[in-house]
Length: 126
Image 1 (cartoon, rainbow, N blue to C red):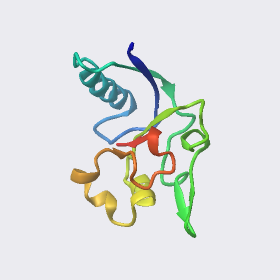
Image 2: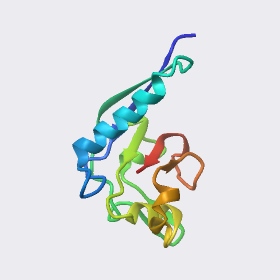
Image 3: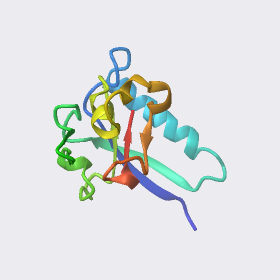
Image 4: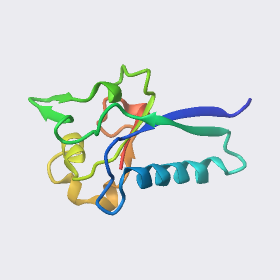
């Protein structure tokens, strides 16, 4: 079986004041490269562009038990199969994981998968 390809899209915003968007994109690319260069990994990761917006605490909101997300990071967003979100101020983390969660960056620096994300197989937040 040949290598599988992951196509991913990165946030339009900055990861932090020290790591602006273009440098954050390079960091993600480097992380994928290190992983996919392992000889036993049959995977290719390709950055296809940016998400349609800067994902922030103003467009990721938990209200009355419902989660409001930008269209291109929702489970139905087949046109953006993997979204990498840069959570500049911790507000996306707060909306997804609860109040106070953004203060624990050591343990929540990158998360995705089965942690209360509605698009479980295709979202990561830095």
